[in-house]
Image 1: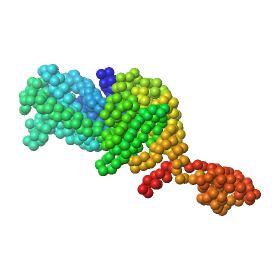
Image 2 (image 1 turned 60 degrees about the vertical axis):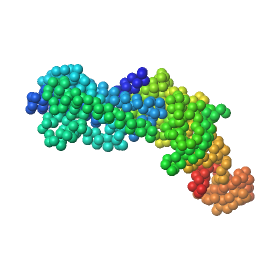
Image 3 (image 1 turned 180 degrees about the horizontal axis):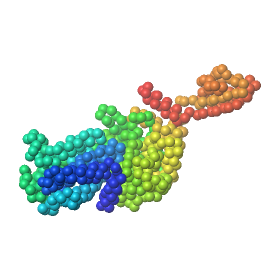
Image 4 (image 1 turned 30 degrees about the vertical axis):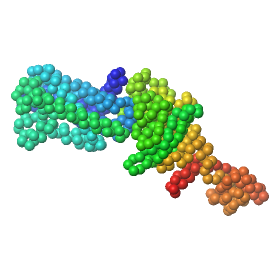
Length: 246
Length: 304
């Protein structure tokens, strides 16, 4: 266990030293949050009701989907995974530590948003903090698993970036975090229902902020968990195949 | 020194229909430095990867200090240190962090002494991305030794290093040998093999073409000794065969002869100089090098 925590600590420090990781985990999401928070709260006061949730969904999706895959591809391409293997570091630890480290970074950002949104932009606090944090943990789980899946599935860094954008951009546009999904054409709304962010937005709205929702919020949580579990399973299968071909 | 620590018998590894390693057998004794030489694609790295447990073999028996690398992965990591031909560490990691990390996974206290031993003490604040190629190689070697392995595999450890980096790594390997560690060394560099290895095997097209000490392999070839001679008044030029010395070519004021009986050829040439009333300014006798023998074996392999 001490090896695991030592590795996690080293990984956390390396993440802090990595400019790209800092940008995708902290800088860009927080700058976006401060700008969009100001814009949304001034042009549409109703946006304040769920601002702490929408900005967290944006930050977590960006950090997990854009931030996790490229380092994993780099590790494979540069021979880090081979080195880890011959030095006796188990393969599961590599994925697990990447996940836990990303979880911690994104949790920090999420808490910063939750605490500052009411102070800076008059955003509403959640009606239920346990429900808020449950939804947040489910969001973190599903997003990180998707990030891992992209990282192990992509054959190159360029492909990883492309796959990540294929999830991130629709998340921003179609999941209902920027504007209500009910305003979208039917086709795009259906497309939005392939994304975990769409369901977790319903979960935040219905359970944490006690607002009306289009989809049952508990069902939404379950669907988000299911997406995360499927992504995790596929990532493990693909990672095992990579391990054999190193 | 007589006890075999690494045992390879009839190793076969295929990629599709191509046999990258085709029935290779050799033994490495305790404390020995055993070199694997061969051109690119000969099967050196594949052989080593089977021994490292990184590749599943398609046939044959492998044993590393009592452990089957194909099935005893966990045990293997305790007794085998590996420096891969191409590997890396995370760009942001520091040498001490890397050492602490790898030792932690082996359940050991960090071996910072190895960083000192390989001259990496001053690099402690540097991240991996800021280190030179030589420093990275030495760091990988230090990490390979962290678990006090009895056998170390070095796959082209000095490839791409400058002269100073190579010399430092050679010293590190010699130090390692002095501690009784058994070393398997894959290299392209003949001088490296000659200076470091107790025995070598030359692999060509997945098969062992020759094995023995560097001297044995060199002397087993058909290459002849080369005599290079310059006299004050160039009495032997333009060149011709003299006694058993067969004239090869002229290079500037030097004549170059080949011979099988070195003593007789040198005496015949010197006698000719003396009889001509000339005197010798420069005389060099060069035995065939390991490199020439290596090229001879490759040429034969290509012809076959």
